[in-house]
Length: 595
Image (cartoon, rainbow, N blue to C red; front, side):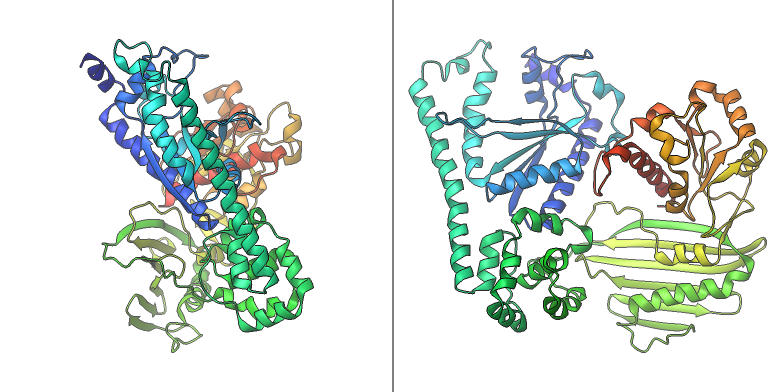
């Protein structure tokens, strides 16, 4: 009883709730990637129980010192895969998504059979840890989570082994009979391990069977079956387009090019965001042709069809309340003579998005009002006032509605553009920043005014003086964050590619166009920063002021150099990883200001 009471003090109820929220987000990220890749899998996750944590701590193997071993599986996720080949694919997917701390794998040995372990430990992205108390990290816990990869056949054996053997071995030293469960039971332990040999053979045999089926169906020109059995991904039962089937029948040399594409190659293609859609045999052919084969006949037959709406027949229909997430909210002054062009840009954007639903919508700007179930458009076009209110059902995700309101209105000090973008969906997960494209187009073609600073597509990161910066930060009309970049006194080798600055300020300026000021500090500005914050903190640093901040967040040269991607969804050149990662972090800070 005393032991359980001690365990209750390890983690507060609030932190347990926060850890469960983090667990859900991490698992959802992995599930989304695996589904996009078409992988067959089941998943489960948990936050380690207080009793289990205490049992681990009682072994004496963990401590709070700098070099002490920490518990790394506070959060655990298990992915059970249908096919053994998908373990390697999932390993690569995990490494491309999160920062790897370490892998723990069982080595293959010719004359020994034991449970094949494939456990990865990964850093929890820092953005998920904001609400976790500092007290939690005073315990011997690491800021990591563990992912275990198994096949479904091995999963049952692992569950039994974990509960009935592993845990008893952990409890050796406790004064009870559990520690002796396997003592002197070498024969039974060997029998337990021999089951593994049979399961391993089953996993390999299943893959071999489907490889044989695939070759047989390929020879018989049963193309749908050949595709499904070769790739073993979640591919629908739809038929191949007759014209494509006939073309394949008559051109075996073309089919050979498609057949040479491996499962790993196809998964890599599927993980490209622009290709995420329900996977049919036609779509498999389309994707391989688009990325690898490039056959003109196949392109002519399939390319256009891939942009039509695809209904997912597996979606279960159930009634759920809609949850609203504000994904973008901005009010900004624009050039006073830009009313007509800004109105046209918004109207053209609405026409592109909803004219297929409302075919009667005029192509040229005028006031309209239409509504059918799930879709709505209202445009008010007056001499000095414009309103666009549009609602559409998502073509990409079931149970989601997008709602955009844009308004142009003249105020006492000028013309203002307001935009609110809302995502209404049946799922509780938070939606991220999503700025409608017309906002960027208005910025480029008309221009924004913020705190008397004019910005448009030609705006660059230019030097700013101390007095100019002070006026900008104190201006009552400032509505955008401010970033200031300093050039270090001694330019390190890794900064040579950015004109001596620690980050690529020009690329940063373009990527944050319309939502942030980006400046380079001139001599007077940097001198003022040094007086206030000290030379060591300022040299080569980046300063960030949020929309309502009076004092900056300072990112030192060392912090910038150590930046890295904690959750990766894009390709990165290793030599410039820190710089891209830091710009990505800055962009996330800015985007949080608008939703």
